[in-house]
Length: 337
Image (cartoon, rainbow, N blue to C red; front, top):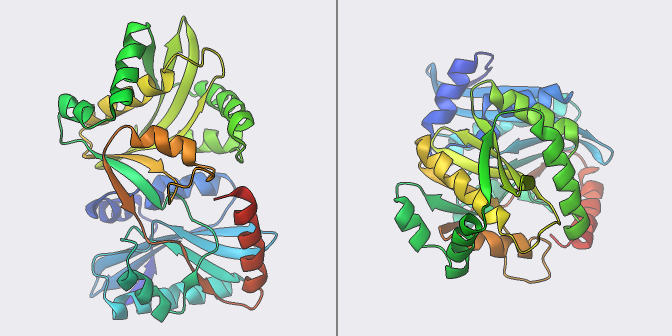
C-alpha cells in the first residue's frame, strides 16, 4: 500500500461519490471552500496495487489553542480492516507532525458503536472533547412518495405545511448570490433569539460559490406577503441532500414559513434524484437544556430515521494537546453542547 496526494478532481470525486451515503464534507468543493478561506488542504489517496481504496481530505487549522488537522466525515475506506486503517493513520500522522500539528481530529461516516470506538482507540485516538460537524442527524428516505413522506411526519408538522400553503406562503428556489446577504441577515436575527455562534458572511459566500460551480447548492426562501421569513442553504451531493444553514425572521411568528421552506427543499431533492435527505445536526439526547433542543424538536417532526455517527476522535501528537483538551471541554460545558 502507498499514499499519494490527489490533484485530479475527477479521480477524487469518482471515489468519494462511489461510497454511500455520499458526504459533501469530503467533496472536492468542500476543500475548495476552505482553500478560499486561506487554509491549507491535503487530499490523500490510499492505493493498493494502483487501486484507490481510501481517501482523506485534511484541513489544516491554525488556531490559538494549537495547530491541528481535521478530517470531517473521513477518512473514507472501502474496507475498514485494522491493518489498512493503521497504515493510513500512520501516514496522516507523519504529515501532521511535519506541519507542526499538535493533534489530528477525525469523524468518519461510520456507526457510533463500541467496535468502531475500540478500533480507533487501538490506533492511539482518544474521544474528542467537542463534536466535528453533525454527529447525530435525522435522515429521510426519498425513495418514498410525497404522500408517504407526509404520512410519516408528526401530525403538527403536516398541519404546519398545509397551513403555510393556505396562508399564502410562497417558496422560491434561488441560485442568486445576492441571497447570501439575506441569509446572513436572518441568521443574525436567529442568533439573537437562540444564542449560538454565527458564521461569517465570507464563509457563506465562499461556500455558495464553490458548490455553485457544479449546481450542487441552492437557497430556498419562504415568503409571506412578499417578505422573506425563512431562508435555507441546501447542498445536493450525489445521492444525498443536506439542510445545511438557515435563518428566520422574527416577524409574523405564527406563520409556519420554515416548514414550507423545508418541505420545498425535500421536494427539490426528490426532483434531483437524491435518495437521502439529511436534516443535519440534532441534539445527542432529549435534554431540554441542550442548545439544540428546539431545532431538534422541529426536525424530528419530519419523521425519518435517526443516524448516529462515531463521535469525533483525536490523535494527540504533543503534550500541548491536553491544554487544548481542557479548553474545549470548558467551552463545551459553557455552550451546553
